[in-house]
Length: 197
Image 1 (cartoon, helix red, strand yellow):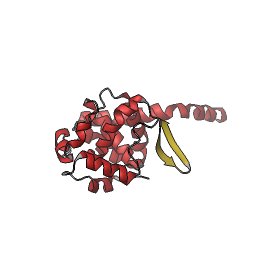
Image 2 (image 1 turned 135 degrees about the vertical axis):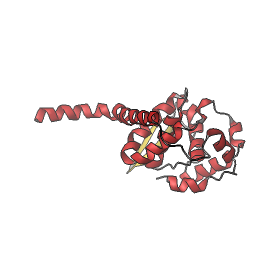
Image 3 (image 1 turned 90 degrees about the vertical axis):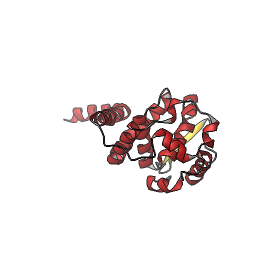
Image 4 (image 1 turned 60 degrees about the horizontal axis):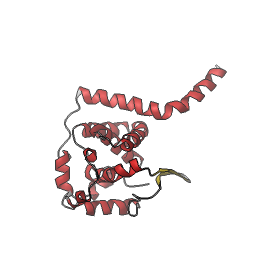
């Protein structure tokens, strides 16, 4: 199931290093050592089914930074939390980390249905912050304190009110992401309904 955002907000202390908090993140979510070099990754469990994807080189390039975002921005790993972190990272930008854009758009596509308000707030927060996707992975990141890195990314202060640009950008992503991911599945349904109408 994973941690909720409410739980994550109390887990990752500012004075702890990112290394310490990432270890706690792995432990609380049952992620072992992170599985960064695994060839296949289980994303979520849906009933008896495991939703998994190949762990491509592009995903490997992004996932270490993504995991630190969970710690820094304090979003959970349950369905709502993944929708929030996806929305946050889209809002903040994923640079040239193409797997991050794709996977975050996927998370946002279900997040806007199950927790639209939370995803909106996370997206706006991202728009007024920075992400780690402006760089490549460097092990030295783990030696930074969580609080110092939050300050560098603009995550240590309250999110300012949404601008008109924030609202328009959110609306575009909130419509575009689900359309991209679910639109193809709706075509056969629409055709079948048309036959019976």
